[in-house]
Length: 219
Ligand code: HEC
Image 1 (spheres, rainbow, N blue to C red):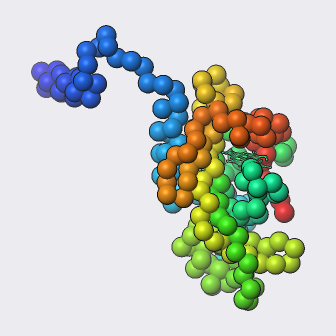
Image 2 (cartoon, rainbow, N blue to C red):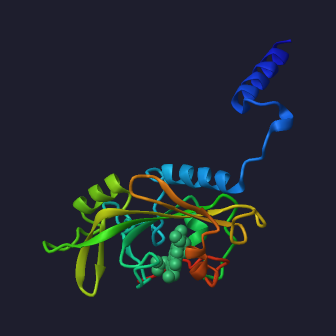
Image 3 (cartoon, rainbow, N blue to C red):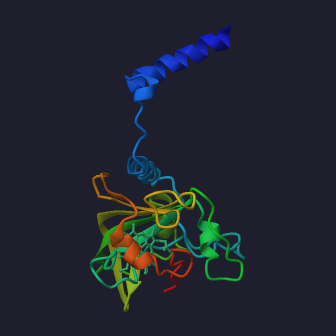
């Protein structure tokens, strides 16, 4: 009795949501669903773990394992996501780090990979705080990573946000994906500016060695 009432309640809510009868329901475009998923993935960024080199147990009780550092994109061209520094975030950091090793595994469904990109700003002051120092750890605790990157002997700090570059693993054969990988871009204001089989991403990622992924780039 109770469950029937609950069920009819649910159905009424659904009917309200659709504002139409069952035979008028138009299936949502796949693109719309992917856009919603990209938006949800972007919303998870503050909590999504930062991927970094394997953390090791410290041999000394008073030392913490090094925190992940912001990385320089190896893509030189301004058109891809070159000339930015980024933190890579993922819900599958462990398996991602195994790409290109003997233990390589396929990343599971609903793997999210997000490059959180920033303009690099030359840091003219002192050196970047060491991942082993207290200031380094304070930064890592508040940002999830140490917001500095080095290149050619110079130190850079993360400047203005340049948005998010998202890849999301969906079942193989999902429309509007590259063999199951959906791409997305989110601008610094949080607006989804692209979602699905984005040609501007696929032109590079199609050739990436690990099933559409480049894998961890050791500097
Ligand atoms: C010019 C080539 C190029 C284009 C275009 C490009 N990428 Fe990438 N992408 C790379 C390379 C190379 C890497 C490896 C990391 C690095 O060096 O930046 C990468 C890494 C990534 C990663 C980390 C996962 C991995 O492959 O290891 C994500 C997520 C990503 N790109 C998203 C995107 C999105 C979204 C777009 C489209 C808006 C895009 N990329 C366009 C070259 C490209």
